[in-house]
Image 1 (cartoon, helix red, strand yellow):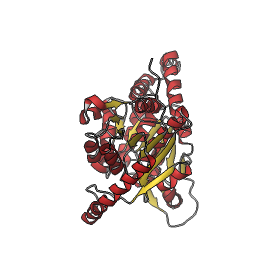
Image 2 (cartoon, helix red, strand yellow):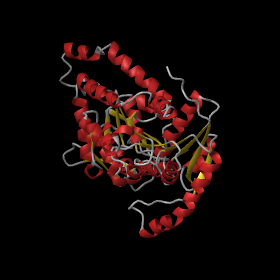
Image 3 (cartoon, helix red, strand yellow):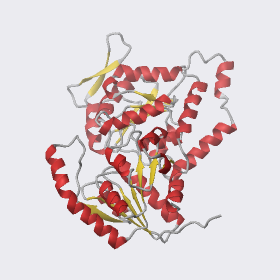
Image 4 (cartoon, one colour):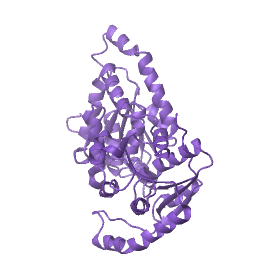
Length: 410
């Protein structure tokens, strides 16, 4: 058996959003776990979240003065970024010469492309990681130069060279791998007797009977929250008094949502089938939402995941991977303005597996959400379990460990 290599210096790049930063940090922690003596540094941009998060985690961060190039920004911003590229590439050259990393890996973000491209030209061993079903233009270009491409979705394999691409999944925190193992053991070990009891007692025909908050729904829109969900969920809670809702609003929207709830009262619709909300003149405290809990953020989020029967959320690759690890029953509402519509494509990949339900933002209404929950209530335990199994099947365990092992021994 070949002896495994031991690396001394690793350079990771990625930033802008948590979807680029946290997978890179997961790899960094796994590298450290396997070899505590390895020195790991990061490359990012001064304007991204990495400028705050990476130093707090104890890693050195090189900041590149680089901006966006994608089509959603104006031509002036694109021109400014192009003009800055020569200096940025020189900065990358300086980083590579002075640090001399044995491996360079890009996780996406403005700074990732230049450093991985320059490292590839200088014959450093490089790799890229693609989180979404359809890669962006930067990773499509970089794939021609790097030694290895890592993807999360099997549907992404067709976009990359087959001889150097591996589908290891999404590098999640160790706690999710542990949860996945527990869920799989539970599936193998037993079938819950609740379904048998219901069938023997003839209760399967009325699954909503005596719920008494037995159905719990978690709704979140990412760290920033989602306005469309913040606006709709109070209405849905009023329409479903037998369901317990938890809504994560995002920190900046929390006070606004609380104020809105305090200023609202329930009003039945004409057919009494759905409850709507109208503004109230007075500012007195409302008791109209006994089944709705509003939180600015979910910490630790894993605790909220495991307590929910149904989860309604965006479809970033990180959320998909974490929810797949626990086999969550999900309704994904992709962010309509995501670049290249990647959130919709991510969610569609799970929907086509029968593992989740997708509802585009343009079709998201009070009636559509109420209908979704009504359909879930009518599902038997066996139907729910089948969806649970398909969601678990999407998750690839030990992705972080496997990526570190593969890239180390490249």
